[in-house]
Image (cartoon, rainbow, N blue to C red):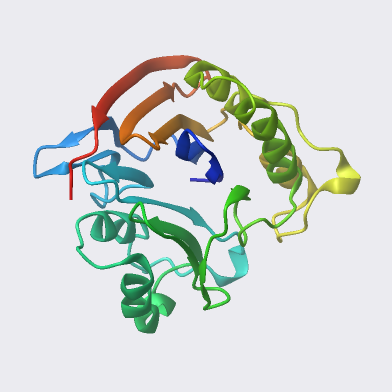
Length: 255
């Protein structure tokens, strides 16, 4: 993922609402979200190159998502896939903080990442760029290609928009509309992550349009306080046009 907006325990009716965009090269093969045949508890899209995922939820209420930490100077071409971390957490019985603590000693093997991991009781954040495991507090948060709540333009804009949506009845379509915003940030507000101003400008919008790399899918996930789950994912073709929608609803399994 390259943008994850989420409301954690910020509303009496919603335990968690996530609105996220996955930005990736179009040539990298991936499958749309489904319950995985080999791991039937997991609902997620799948990276067909390394068989991991960028965001997923389970029938038991585990949730995880990951973003790359943008620093091209530190990229290791032989590093293992970060998406495997998400799928490994989703199929683990460990509590989030304990699981993150267990992988921390080898986290340096991966290219930079920031990860969210939750089990319905707690939600934790970890990045191998600051090495800290932190419980996420109730509220509306945003994560792009840096640390949690780093005030990049797309993060602050997305959080503000999500606050308005949270005050209304839940409508997955409204969150997908938020994720479709292609307006770039103004130059004075651009971060400097080492990719140059032209690319910073293109990457600054909530939804990134085409040209070999862009927003591949938008995902909206709601876990209700009553245990109901609603999941909607919209995929995009290389020209930026919608290419299909997956909608899944289910009730969390009792623990």
